[in-house]
Length: 430
Image (cartoon, rainbow, N blue to C red; front, side, top):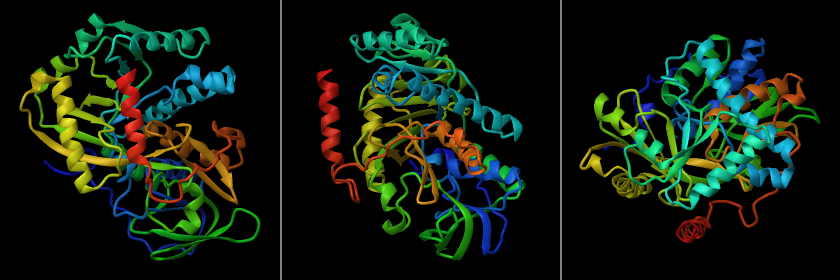
């Protein structure tokens, strides 16, 4: 079993054009994940001189290449709860931002002819307990009554059983606008498109310090390979642990890096895979310590979850893989001794309210905090922040939001074990 991401291992590695680090650019983007690459493409299309500065050895190797492969609409938190806090109009706008995010992914796949197995078969949110069906029904009623989403439907246990070969589920809520894709191949296509339009992509270029020049948006970025002057800077770092706390401390006090872990089976064969998940959707349970799963184009099962409240490391990934193996056996006992070919973990950039944050602070633009729903929103926000930096302030669907620091969070997330215990108790008592 490889302790490596299936998405990156089964996709061609993007090789940037060999270039010296430019002394000056219009826009410097810190981070070569989906946010950074999407912004680079949009800005380069408009003729801007763009440099993407990625600390790692390859693009999209962190959260963008280490997720479950879902491209889902819908908020990370319950729409009704959000509406109660901020009002229906604002909550509806945020929900629709996720619809737009899936549309943005679909548009880029089409416009750039990216071969990434993108398909839009929907998402099925599954109830593992009978009493969870009332919560799903309530969510569906609010979404319909408030005119938020008419492409949803409650499925009873029999209808779920007809497309998910498991006896664990009591029903589910279907979101028809959701999709899925091969994350590694999408990343390769997105980076290739950005470079083709003129963006420079520099891997192995960790940004260690950012120095403001004057009172505007101009900055000097001090990297492992030299210094770059930029008229504008976009921080698209997510939960990365690269870089010093001097320049990134404000952001890191507002993001908790939480590990999420995934295993991928050996190829099951087309017939067996189709029998297992006939709808070929993305699937997720609604527990706090939840599971999510889907099939791949080569008929593997991708099965993930927050197996342990810990950061990702080879030891942590391996331990989490054994927990996920047990969860897989509980969900699909008919798979028996199926071999697991891949196991890996990644960091979710979790915010306190589990919603994205994007805007400007001290002359630096930023977009991050996708809280486990980032594959579509990161692509979308790269595009939207490019528009903001081009003068369209209203392009940011998350503008004007307060982002207070998380109390007691100044460095490594020492409190994760306690958080994990709290959520496990909530699931047990629900």
